[in-house]
Structure formats: C-alpha cells, structure tokens
Image 1 (cartoon, rainbow, N blue to C red):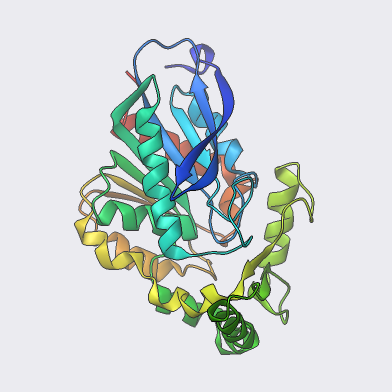
Image 2 (cartoon, one colour):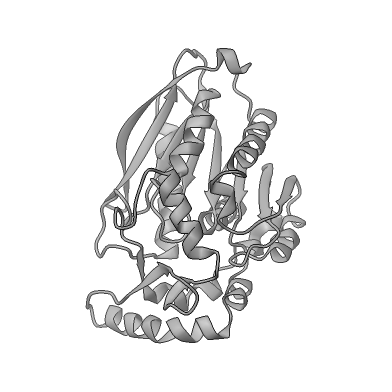
Length: 308
C-alpha cells in the first residue's frame, strides 16, 4: 500500500466497562477498506493520559489501514474512577484485558489479530499481558518498564528518599479510607517528584506542546502509594513465555528504564525485533526522533500483522 492510496479514517469516542468503571476509548476506523482489519490497542505510561501524543501514533496506524483503540486507564484522563490519579498496577492490567476484549467485539475487526502497544509503564503492561496468556498477534513495547528493582536503582537514593515519606503517608491514608496524598509525576532535579531527572521536565513540556496541550490541561500527579510497589513490578519475569512477535524500542541514555536491563529482557523473547536509538526516555514521542520511531512500528506491523 503506497502513501498515495493510504485509506483515511474516522474517529469515534466510546466507552468500555472495566469492573464497573467506564474507561474512555477513542476508536480510529480506517475508511475505504472492506476486509476485517487488525486492531492496535494503545495506552500510555506512568500517570499519563492518552491525549499526550498517543493520538499522533494512532493516526499513522489508522491511515495505514489498522483499526486503533486508544484508552485511558480508570482514574486517569477521560475515564471514570475515584479517587483520581490512582495508579493501581493490578487494576491497570485488568483494564488492558477489558480493552482488548472490547476491541474483539467491534464490527470490522479481525479478532484474531489484536496488537498490544504500550510505552514506558504500559510497555511493561503489554509485555506482562503477553507473557501471562493474552492472545496478542504482536506487541510493540516502546521504552518499556521491565524491571522494578532496576527502575528504583535508576531513580537513585536521593530521589527515592525524597518521595518515600509521601508514599508511606499515602499508604496509611489508603488504609484509613482517606483521600490520597499526591506527588508530582514529573519535576526538576531536586523536586519531590516520581521522575526528576534533568530531561524529565523538558521532555514533558515538549510532549505537551506537540500534543497541543499546556500544563494544567490534565493533572500531572499520582497517588504516592504506587511508589511502594514499583520495585515489585518486573514484567521481564514472564518475557520468556511470550509467544507472539515483539518490537522493543530502547533509548541508549534512558534514565527511567535503563537500556542494558531492557536489552537483557529482550534476549528472553523468542521472536523479538530490537531497535536501539541514541537519546533519553522522552525522545521517541517528539521531533526529530518520532518519525523514525513510528516508521519502525509501522514496518513491524506490516510485516507481522499485515492489512489484507
């Protein structure tokens, strides 16, 4: 399919149910095609709503003939769920299961060819789902979280000490049924924030700008209790059980999901394509690297899950 005859798409804003909570999902359906299309199911990383750059990827895939579903986890973005900004790893994995199940109910979908697309924390989620029984046709994991202890080590002792009191207080408040203690998701070095590497705040600002958003359009906090659990969440543990093709894109200077650890996990996957790029954790989403990253993803899709 050449660039000149790529089909266009239409977008509808829909909902699916996840344990009684409505999750928002944007569905991009290619037009001008008659055969059932493969579907790409997408979600964002740590505490980030789908509106931050994911639509740019979805538009590329939809123009190439793929149906694309981009969803927000419960408690985040345009989805329901109280309290807000609550990142529960187990619940997010269930949201993934329910999003994929919803995709399989849609007309015009080839239900046997569903692709899981995740970035950063969600890159870990799609690897976890693929390694624990989800029947994906393929997986795209962009700068994925693969090892909890490695992520904690990458954070560094000083930054960990800064956020630890908030995490403990929030966990106590949760046990008492009180509202969350929040911590900033992104901050400058020295701030009390989950990600406070030198590239974090500038990277966040670029993502917002290229998404047509500004600071304050969406909350940029997370209930701090999740920080007590990140070190225990290691999607790489089930990587050897993944049966479908996987594309893993790694950044050589990634200070959030270290490259060496991601490469080690990639070697456990039987059918894996690895691309390593120079840059940091936030570079794949924006210029000048974004066109390269999304072109690799599209080439992988066309090779492993082609549009018929």
